[in-house]
Image (tube, rainbow, N blue to C red; front, side, top):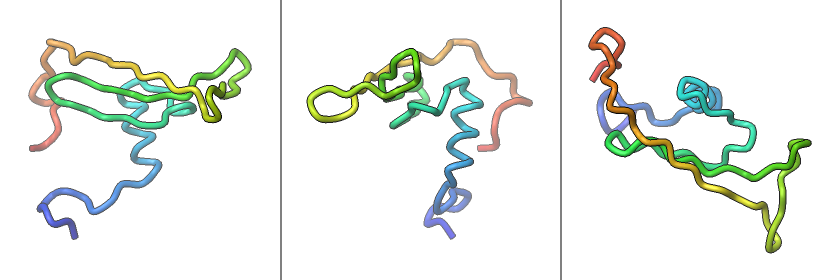
Length: 83
């Protein structure tokens, strides 16, 4: 049981992948994801070549950060999550 009523204690990899899919984000090279309800989504990704291989730099994988701003479009009440 979570210490905050209604919040899970943990999430599964499948749940995280489903959340990314719902946002339209590919998970293949995803390293980190944060969601800010005011600002939008920030994703950290491995940089890959056309063959899908992760590129390296300075002894580690090359990373990039992308920011996707929150849209001003409102979600209809019947489509919003509980809470």
